[in-house]
Amino acid sequence: MSTTALNSTALNRAPDPLAEPWRPAEFEARLRAVGEERYHDSHPFNLRMHSGDLSQDELRRWIVNRFHYQRHIPVKDALITAKLDTPVLRRMWLRRIQDHDGLQDREGGIERWLRLGEAAGVHRETLLSGDSVLPGVRLAVDGYVNFCRLRTPLEAVAASLTELSAPDLMRTRIEAFQRHYRWIEPQGLAYFRTRVSQGRRDSREALDLVLDWARSRDDQERAVAALRFKCDVLWSLLDAVDQAGRREQE
Ligand SMILES: O=C(O)c1cc(C(=O)O)c2c(n1)C(=O)C(=O)c1cc(C(=O)O)[nH]c1-2
Image (cartoon, rainbow, N blue to C red; front, side, top):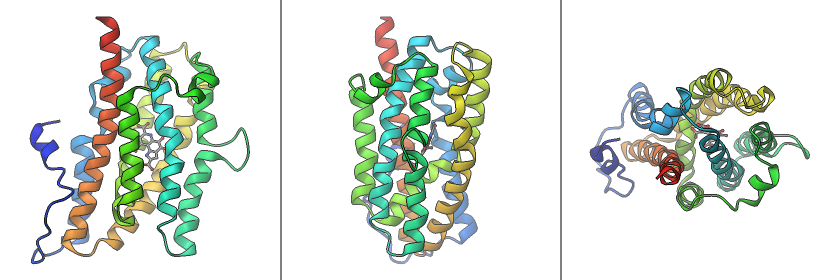
């Protein structure tokens, strides 16, 4: 990611009241361009994952640290749900919480991630304790949760639009795991399989809301900036995981 790209995360810039809103197609293209430019599928750690270059320790470290992100997704979705003012919208967002938490014990995305850990030889107690979560990962996840706590519903929902790019990444990841990391038991990949269809549905719904809500140019620019910020969250998380591995090798 270039420095210019980082500096353009203009979350607090002054709005230009005279700026014309972008037409819906242009607005959508600008949102999608953010993902193409800075989604974490092109982070060096993900590239190494996909080409089979990660050691068992590195992959396990990623699973442990990514669990910190996973377990906070329903927390940030609860914060968003509290900002939505109709039953239809709250039901829509509540389903996301249920996708992760399940409707009962031993179900849902968090449980599937715990099983991914077990399939890779990481005890669920290790994941649940959170003891080995890296400081940079904690900060990145806190950043995302607090963003959704403090910003408008439009910005919080726009931040979730990284999920436009997630289903393709899930498919690449499943293939990479099957080819290069056969020591992980295949049933552990259920998390990623489930996210392909969930991510498609969630991102479609979120995109429709953002296109509908952001009518002024200022709102549209805020939505784009929110999505850039979220890309930075995912990128920083992987930076922390990547650097911990490099430190260990020194
Ligand atoms: O593994 C990934 O690369 C990845 C990325 C993202 C994303 O793009 O935000 C999510 C997920 N996974 C994921 O599993 C998930 O449940 C999820 C929820 C959200 C969100 O912001 O609401 N993003 C993502």
